[in-house]
Length: 221
Image (cartoon, rainbow, N blue to C red; front, side, top):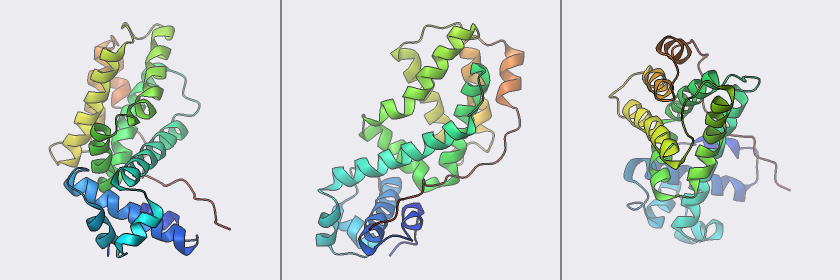
């Protein structure tokens, strides 16, 4: 049986059914991070969660169902904390730099979630908009403010997002250190047409450490 993860911790105050569901989701995160979605199986998820296969099907229709729910939960919790961190920040240069750095920092603060998110973004294409939607808005903000000299299209969005994913992968793999986010952010700002001095200042500004937090789960009746 796995140690209680973020889902299990968030469901600790809930009823038995909710705690079992959360335990299955924690097991799925661990397996998706380790083996990828395709290699994971319902049997192994149930075994790792220390429940019977039949119990799995009480909570989820199949592997796709638990995979999409886990992936959406990870993405929503990361983007929620990004929104909180950037509340009141209007400058598009600062917002764009902060979003890249915070995204990587948050995902790396829970490596299993970070690995699972990386793999899920390739498997569940529906996640794309939940992750890049806010990015698109910040890039358009920069164009409107006159600080980004680019055309906002899908090619730019995909390139930008790939840079973030590359930085996250490098850090999770140990190929880059805690400065991965700043390095990626500086490159992104330069790509967007921000002058070198301003890009470097924004990308390397000191940020407070962050850790991923699961949104509070409502009590069950």
